[in-house]
Each structure stands twice: as structure tokens, then as C-alpha cells.
Length: 226
Image (cartoon, rainbow, N blue to C red; front, side, top):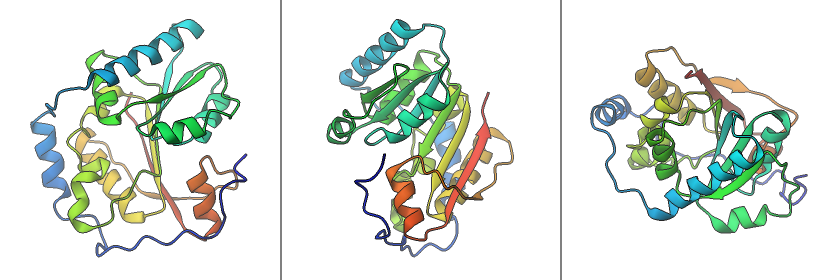
């Protein structure tokens, strides 16, 4: 299914950071105290309306799963097949990546949506829509020290995740990213969240397959926000 991904040529992440960013806790607490107020773009409101209409046409009672940053949609396809009684939104901001995923035999219980996740997450929360599961698989690590606020755990939208609920899983091939995510989720929820090594022989995404073929250690953290 992922034969067009060149194996074994992915570089290891290089960063001046050797541990979670020293400013992470202060940044997360600031974002928790001051909700993100950026106006929401109309095209993202339209995207959510289309997504919900697709779910309602299939089964209005179906629990929702969000595959955040789905890329070409391989993970969305896999998740939908794994949870056939759920409806899966695969969301990515790149129309090019989503369009390349169109040839995939997407199950009837899944839809690829072009939207900005920052707005899409907030719209779900605004409409009090809860998730059964929430995947964040191999997000852009933004490894430079000055890029902390670009990582999801350091972004102003991050506290919204708690309102969405669901079983949340984040994966990366950069240990520090997952350690930061675990720390940020612990601060957000008061639960103990741990970074853990992850091993699989059945990769869910092209990146996961590529990293495994390149000899990278995979990491993940999980939390139940229900």
C-alpha cells in the first residue's frame, strides 16, 4: 500500500535541544490561562460543515475519530478499517497531499478534509463535538530551539485538545518531541503521561514506514481524555 515511499533514506533529526525545552511549562500554562482568540477562517467552517454532513449521511450516531495531519490519507484509511463503526475525519491543510490520496480506496466511514487544524480543532470544541479517538501521527517536529511555539505542544491552540476528549495518541521519531508532548499533556490534564518507545511491523503512515526502514527509534505518548 505504501510502495511509492523510498525506504531507508530518512535523516535523523538534528537539534541543539537534548531535553524538553526549558520554556515549555511556562508557555503551556500561559496558553491555558489565555484562550486562543485568532478569528476562524470561513473556509474552515465550511470544511467542518462538509465533514459533519458526510458523517450524518453515513450514520449520525457514529462516534468520531480525528486523524490530524493525515497527509495522503493512508493512516485515515487504516483507522477507518480498524474502527468500522466509527466515522473518521482525515484533516490536512495541504490540498496537494489530500489530492494525492484520492486514488486510495477510502472506506465509506472516512473522509479526507482540507482544513487548517488550528481552526478545525477550535470549531469542534466550539460546537461541543467530542472525539472517540484523536491521532497526531508524526507532526512536523520543528527541531530548532526557537521553534517551540510551532510545535503543537507549544502552540496557543494546544489547550483546546482537552475539550475534544477521546483517546489521544501522538507519535514521532524524535524522542524529545514526545517527551515534550507528554509533559504538556500532563500539565494540561493533571494526569501522568509518559513518553514510551514504540515498535511496529505494520506502519500506519508513509513516514512511519520510512523511519522504520531508516533505522529510527519511534516514540509515542497516549492519554484518555474522556
